[in-house]
Length: 114
Length: 113
Image (spheres, rainbow over the protein chains, first blue to last red):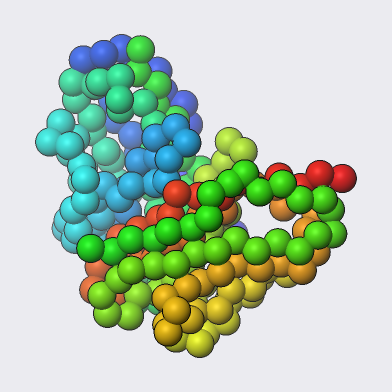
């Protein structure tokens, strides 16, 4: 079965650089969620989109922005990177925001900021 | 706000031992409850879920029952294998912000032969 695809899988950046992470949801899934997992920590919700509109916002820094495109893929743009942004970034997708539609997580993008 | 508390690890067990990971939650309304598993270097995989009180989720020998009276969702497995070694996350999703998971801190389980 098709799963959530994230690219790149690994990314190394310098401080103050920018990064773009991409998420391709499971076919027909119209809802995307972004999470950040710091080393040894639990995943923290950043933001979600439903039908290309932002649906929920969590602890996403102002330096980050995200959007969902017409084909439902999503991109997380991160600017002025800081050392503390080094983390595993997960994307998840679900078929609508209906309660009971389980989100499926992608393998994550590991971002290292040097 | 919502919160999830789960027992700290690491939990070290011998193969075929009984596993219990405690999880309690605080939430308004009636959240859905989940257990996700994360193997080294990999993403989060759904292990099981329960959407209402007294529901029992089960998968691959793992079970958890949604107990509203004790606000708990403890994970159990009767006989663990080395391949069960992973980090286990308890999580809740509020029904009014579906998918906005609140995760517990995760419990590392190490199963030795």
